[in-house]
Structures are given as C-alpha cells and as structure tokens.
Image (cartoon, rainbow, N blue to C red; front, side):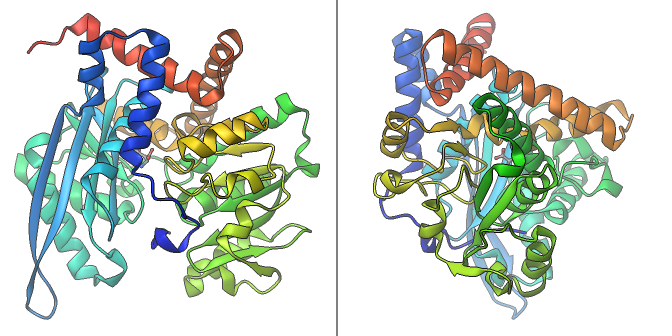
Length: 426
Ligand code: GLU
C-alpha cells in the first residue's frame, strides 16, 4: 500500500520542497510580524541526525544506506512524524516534511512538535529479511534521539505497520523494556489502535464533507478524482465513495483509470493488491497522472507526493476544491494561480492531519493502558478534524486569507506562543 517512483507522476517543474516550506513560512512570518530571532529559530530544524546504515543483504554482500531523522521543533511536545522509504529521499525533503509536521500538529492542536525520518532505499527491491534488518538498524541508529517523550515516529510513504513493529521491538531492546509509545501505526496486536490504517483517509473525508457542505455540493452529484493509490489514496476513495461521492478516477505510478459513471472502489483496491497496478482494473478508461489532475471533476485529492500541481498544469485544473492528502503537492506558484481562479485548497497541514491525530490517540492509549473502540476513535477524530477546519476557516474569513495562509498562521502562531512561554534556553 505504498507509492513509489514519483518522477513518473506529473512533476514537470523541479521545486525543492524545503524552499516551498520556507517560502510558506516567510509569508506567514511577515503576516504575524515575527521578530528576526524567532524567524531564525523556526526556519531551522532543532536537530538533524544523519546516519549510514550497513546492511547484510541476502546474497552476503553489505550495502550502506543513507538515513536521517530530523526534528524541526519540540516546543509544543515530543516531535512527531513518519518515516519515509524512497530512492530519492534526501535531507532537504525530510527537513520540509518535518517543518510541515510542526504546523500540522499545531493546526490539529495535538501536543506535539514536528519531525520526520527518511531512508534512501528502493524498499520494493528488499526481501522481507532485508527489510526487517534495515528497520532494526535504523531504530538502533536513531534510538538516542527518539522515545515516547522525545520523538515518536510513524508510517509514511514506503513504510507500514510491520515496519513499525520491527522498530518498536528493536528500540525496546535498547531500553531493556517494551516501549510501545515510542512509535505509532503499530499492528493492533502490539498496541496499535483501531482506525489508524484508515485515519488519513478519514480526515480527508471529514474535511471534504465540510468543504462540500459550505459550497452547497451534495455528495451524490459531486465527482472526485484521486491521485495516488497508497494508504491515503485508497482510504480516501473508499470513505468518500461510502459517503455517496462519485469517485470517477484514481491513479498510481502505473497511470490512472477513469469511469464517468463512478469506479467500483473495492474492486480497484482488490486489483491494486493483486497485481500491484490499479491500471489493471478492467471497467475504466486508461488515463495518465497528468490527465487525472486536469479532469473536469468537482474535487481533486492529490494523495501521492510533493510538487504534483505545478505552474505548468495548474491553469488546466478544473476542480473547485482541492483536498491535499499528500504533503506539499502544490507548488507556491501553482497555489497562487489556483487561488486567483477561485479554487478552494484545503491545505495539507489541515487536510492530511487525520493520520497524526489518530497516531496521537494511539500514543495516549499506550501510555494509559486503556484501549478504545472504533466508535470512540472515529468520534474523537471527527471532533478534532471538524474543529480544526472551523478554526482555519474562521481565520481565513476574518483575516481575508486563503485556507493555506490561515492554517499556516494558526499553526505557526501556536508554536511561537509555546516557544516564547518556554524561552529559548536549555
Ligand atoms: N506520515 C503521516 C503524516 O505525514 C503521519 C505521521 C504520524 O502519524 O506521526 O502526517
């Protein structure tokens, strides 16, 4: 359930995600009137650990993998954020993703700072034995800087519940005790929570419902296209279809499928799980990822990678609402163009927060030892997502800002407040 090979998606303009993150920050910092020292503090990451991991491969050779864990800011609590496996993983990308996690946790108002990890690896080429070895190596290498009160990793592109289980086990071995709260997104039998797998998609469903309601769109006459068919894309498709929305197109790295009458999402997911390619689904037309982004639909959900909606394709986007399930899918220039043409963009740091919110619920359950049922998880998630949406919408209306600007300002303002209250000293 992961996406890879982002280069075959529609990126035609090379934008460093860290430049995007810093540009967004600078605009919000100007609006908030932040002083120079606070700007410097928040533009940089508090800690960046780079490690090189030797791994014995099945053929007996040893390969060395580049990996890192970046902690952007811990003023509001332990750092939180996923671990990404990708052949193109690099420090600047992880820096951007860590900074976005700070704002995301703050917008959702959960008590965490932001962090992210990455390993430069094509995980699809690893055997299960090699994948386990790599996850354990990584856990031990970053063990000095993670922990339930320090930094709590989770899944991201290329990693899943099994990866989390290996990391939890290896980290626990370094501590001499079982420490499930060091990581979230674990299998349920190891202290994972019900609802974590679906969480990012559930969050997308809540914000899309809220945006559609405000725009006067009724689900049954509202069409949706989803780019990316990993965890976030599949669950968004399934849950939106479940609420009556017409999901007419989805895509993965093999390309896209389109059926104006609506796709059978369960069949498309089964197809993806079977052959690894959603494009093997029979009852639809084949389209490219580029075509998917510019389909005449009401709602577009980019659920793949950074830099997918660019200055080159933004003028052709026809959706009225974009709900960003991926982190950083829209470049700043494309963002400006879409805003000018009246498209409502529900930004990543709000729309994709469902995953980390349910991660927070998992961490709370691990620490209290009391486990919740599905209803409790989904009720609480709905509450958090709806409140966050309403708070961002209120700032946007009051201060005449886009939803993205409003979310950044709300998120950054809370981090600034916590930083000032704590002071910038040890
Ligand atoms: N990787 C997810 C994200 O980008 C979830 C992070 C988490 O649960 O800590 O939001």
